[in-house]
Image (cartoon, rainbow, N blue to C red; front, side):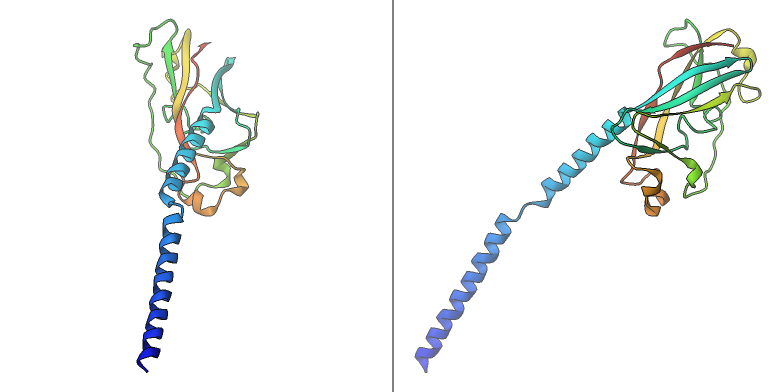
Length: 208
């Protein structure tokens, strides 16, 4: 009887040792998730910088009378992107939100822009389809803005002025508009699958 118990005990001990060794091996050879997470974050940061840098903002004078500006976004990325128009160069309220600045032509960089009254608005969330602008690879989307009182003080803009459009993208998705999830739209401005960053056009001289 004692012999059987001894054999049984040895077998049980061997089984336990084998199980322990197997689990230890699996644990030691399991890839760490931390490097993967760091790599994913680095990849996201690289992608963000790449996508944002591929969106080129430009300004042009459409007409002098009435004075109109054309503000455009060109997508030089290899795929389509969708822009949330809020506070972007394609926002119909770009002038009122202070995204467009005017400086007398020939001024140096230290010259204060001509004061344009700006407003603050509260948006209804989530944004509707009218606020999502898809720009295909190599394509350009442009809006025209008329410079008129009381939005801008025309009497201060007479002559030649230098114009710049500058601000920050609220959300840019590397997707077509219909591929953006409801959850991402509800988190517009803070969604993990949308990119954010600064934009600034080259200065362009216009005459009013």
